[in-house]
Image (tube, rainbow, N blue to C red):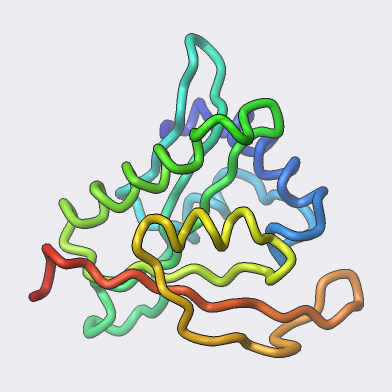
Length: 157
């Protein structure tokens, strides 16, 4: 992902936001804020010719050095490309890229209503750690998340 990809990436992010089941965010930030909140590595886009169909990136879970190998997954696929295996390819590539960067644990917090995302993560080795009831509000409504994680079998053994 390059900074020049941000307009297309932001549009896909906004599509996800509009579903109400992808994130607690209610709008996509400007590039500088998004860039500051994500790791500078493992930022991927899926391109088809000149079109970006999806993106994936990692955020740090903590600033503490002991957690340098733990990151949170964000993955979004444009509505036009959903159901075509793009999410699986993106998440698989993100896992490979994260392991190349010595990241040993990936985690994802997903709304339980977003079954497609939960199933995708499970197919690629994530396991459910638990459910966080009423963890935060979105548009004034309390929401739960399912916490999933994937421990690398190649890094930090």
